[in-house]
Image (cartoon, rainbow, N blue to C red; front, top):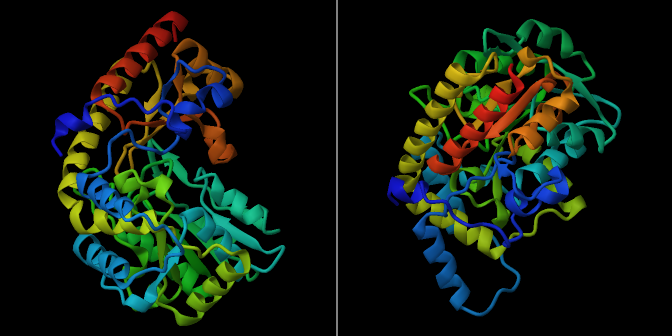
Length: 393
């Protein structure tokens, strides 16, 4: 697909789109430009559309098992894109990343025990821990001059003997860091020494912007592979979230058994026919589409960075190394959290993700999704510039 297709403003209203059709319910206005939930505004690769269309033509949509070709597509993708050679038996189907998070807590963290996470971080991490009767133990990220890093000294203290599980977000949502190999090894070594299993959410692994590569934690060494459950999906990469399809990479046989047992207890193993079909087609035939997408996202990222630098009036943005999500620091404006949210909705006409959804550490921040056409992004930035000007920040 040409870059021109990525700059087309597609009409997604009236399709039960969370991003577009729930604005009135969630933000109080239907006329906002939606730059919030992590869902891209690009049509899926033609290979995916073609595979789904061909399968729909066969008018039987009954119970479906996970075919060998699905596993082979994942193995090929991980080897080509991430230099990670995985055995077929390591791959466990999941209907999504969030169900996998819940299964991991229920399988591996005793009720009441602490599970470590690194806020500000993806909100469902908190929910998966708390609804399972566990404690979300914070190991907050540190921010220095717009660069977010892990606080490994604090982590060393947080990993008490009661901790059996740690949630890692890599690349990180919302601060958009692509963790370096040295950072990952340091975190992994601490967990290995304490007998802590790592659940590594790597759903944004393919969305790296720049020359800094993403490395799956489990691929760094056999020892780290033995303590890591890697969660991946084609949903963010190819815009397939509505198809409900993900996979887990687990080389440790006992961990794999525990996760599968937890899935069986909650009934979360049923495979959807179209998720399997779409994922397989994307992984086998979508690399050219992805390369074009990455170029488009890189240009949008740079547009946004220039805007923040030239017109942000004290607002700053963490360097976006991966994902299509920008973490905007608006604390310099001096607005209370509710007033900040109202400013973006009422003054700027934008729907962004409130930073508080990523933990209290996100207060004063907003997350902006720039996986949209360049014209839509330019319109959004124009509205924001006008709102900033009217406020006189």
